[in-house]
Length: 250
Image: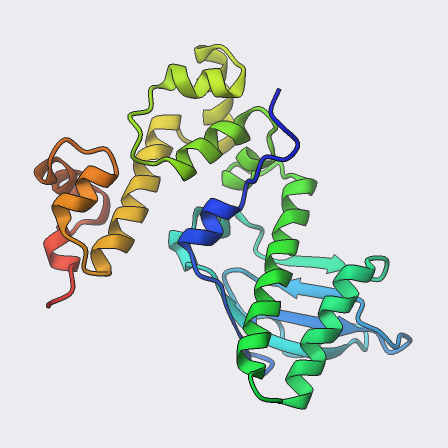
């Protein structure tokens, strides 16, 4: 059985930088709110793919609003999240303390506030994502896969070691399932086969590296391709453009 201490987020956090910047209502996708009858933060709202409504419902007051980005559509976890996330933090002292620190930093505008808000916002988002993983989902996608105690170890293995020459039998063994049961469960939960998901993950990482100016041969080797030509063909099929076209001019 997989360990309860399996880290399902670090590989994603390390590859997709989280940026949180204060933003006006109507241009924000992350907010902390309280009701008129409360004197402390009550709810955290996050819309991964769009803006939040400008006016809170039922007389709620917005205490902090920001725009948070985390890799956009390239991040498979963000793409799998619900369109709207709302978490009540009234009974969560740690989340309330974090929310109040964010509010204070934004209001006081002290030296270094921009960096502090970004760091605190990152912690807030990671904690929101932990809650989503704990709650699970019935929707098809990566969130469901990471929430599945059988599938998550194999998905994390692919995230952490994308260049390994994975075979489906190895991934099934990590999951503690037969190959056929693993393949069926993975496809039903994520909506794609394990090898298709692995190829997509490799392409996302390869594009990041190439857009940062890395050599195509080095990127191909890093992600398990036999040659730069083989990776270039896969890259062209996936993105509709060759690695050379996306590589920045030096």
